[in-house]
Length: 186
Image (tube, rainbow, N blue to C red):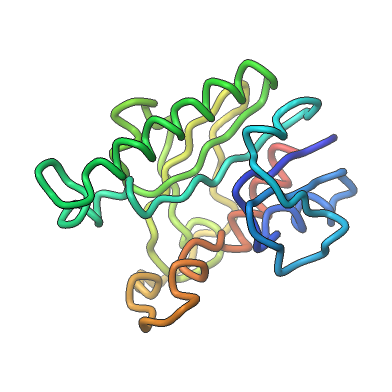
């Protein structure tokens, strides 16, 4: 399959599909930390045509409910939230016009008021003893089935220390989830 993973620079999901023989590419505005030959540096909106599967990881900073104290109604950055939602909703509808199989991933988010979430998953359902409730909106695909339920319910992601890479590192998809995606949707 030809697979586009939009808004991904880590290439965790891209690599999981590549490991199964698929022609997968990541696309982001920034350089990849992975294989440059598998990365399209550019706007995902310009790279939606010609794929068998599109997986989208739009930025959650403005849309996550955990940011309500900055982005909520009446807050200083509320317009940034509205802009992020509008861009992401457009991305979703543009993607499903181009491809019969599309997934959009985001945490607990105001986005799901505009595009109803299909299912929520947790890292502990895919071999990681952590919690990070993640929503998936699915188009033309079945729900993701847990592959390895493990004990442990640590909230390590939000406990990451401040630093220049915190946002980037918090957004990386757990490899067990990426493996689940590749094995079930590939």
